[in-house]
Length: 298
Image 1 (spheres, helix red, strand yellow):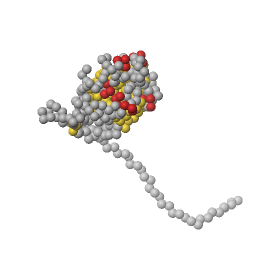
Image 2 (cartoon, rainbow, N blue to C red):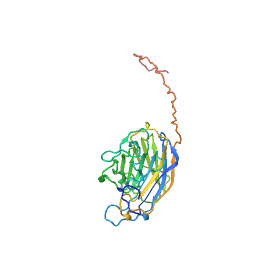
Image 3 (cartoon, one colour):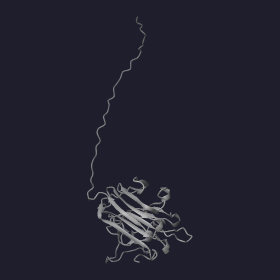
Image 4 (cartoon, rainbow, N blue to C red):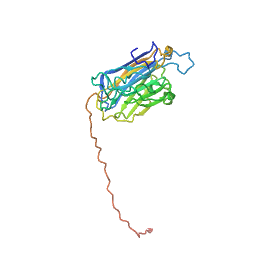
C-alpha cells in the first residue's frame, strides 16, 4: 500500500492530501482560509461491534513550506509528512550522501537549521482523536488514556500537540463531525504564529461562531523561508483499524479558499498619534477673613 507497516488500514481505506500550490503566502502577515465540508449521517456505516468505535474519519488542514505532500502518511497521521523524508531541520548523511545517520535506537539525527521545511501548523478534526497520539520516529504526543472522540487536535511546527479537546466542550452546535448540510470552517493564522483563530458556521446562518482561539506560543521571526507558505488539506478513513465497516462512505469538500499577502517584502510603517493637548495649571491665591452681610433696601 506504499506506507509503513505500523499503519494498519483495511483494503477499502481512502486517503488523500493536496496542497494549493498556485499561491504562496508570507506568514509575516495574517493568513486566512476556509472551506466547506459535509459528512451525511447516511454515509456512516455503524459498526456492529460493542466497542466505542462507530466510524473512523479524520480530516485536517495545514500551512506548509512544501509545495507538494511528499510521502504523506494516512491513518492516525492524517496526511503528515513522513519524518524520514522531510523534517524541520537538517539530517545527517553518510559521506556518500545516500543514507541518513541514525542513533542506536534507529532515530534520525537532526541538526537544527533556521530554515523552516515542512508544516507550520496543522489543525485536525478526528472522530477517534488518535491524531494526538505519539508515533514513529520519536513523534511527540499523548498517551491512549487521554484520547477524545470527536476531537480537535492542533500540532505546531515541531509536531508538538498544542490542543487536544473534544468538540463538545467547545460548542453545543458543533459537537460531532457528522452533518447533513455543508458546514463552513474558517481559520486565521495571526501575528507570526502567536495566535490561531478557528470559526465555523452552518448553512442556516451567515454569521460565524468562534469555535476556539489557540495560543500557539511561538514567534517564527528568526526562521527563513517564511514567505513561501502554502495551504493544504488531508483526509483519511478509517484512522486506525483493519475493520472495513468503520469507513465513512461519503465525504464532501468544496470552496477551498485562501487569503493572505503574496510577496517577499516585510512592509513596516511608523504610525504617530496626534499630540494630546494639555491644559496648563492656573495658580490661585487663597483669601481669608472675608465676611458677608445682608443689605436691606426699601
